[in-house]
Length: 151
Image 1 (spheres, rainbow, N blue to C red):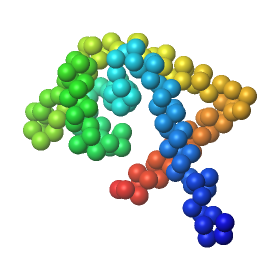
Image 2 (image 1 turned 180 degrees about the horizontal axis):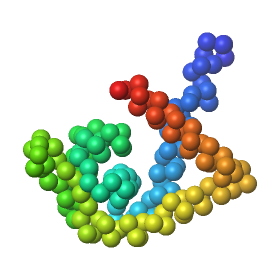
Image 3 (image 1 turned 90 degrees about the vertical axis):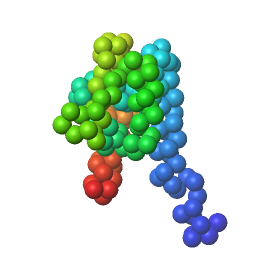
């Protein structure tokens, strides 16, 4: 293959390993989240709300890098499961406030073991915990860089 086409080899793409690893990691969460009867995107919303109690749809959208047209149906399904409440802001009716229900708050106790269970999945001779932590740090830097460029 000539030099110009080397750039188009799948093995030379940064996007493919990031995409593939993302899919595998998301799949690791499946059995844990299935026990809680939630999806991975719902888990992400819950993580934010467990940390920050109440958020607007636009704040959730910004934190999770999801468009509001993706987030709104997700939040509706979570409301149907009685995990969250959606209410118009009293100060600004254009804003929809998202908060946890008691059921959503209670789910936190059941989910507390998930992060350590996922980390245990990375325990191997091929990769150290230091490498996993460094990888997460690099990904966080990339996210922040893209977030700044989008602003």
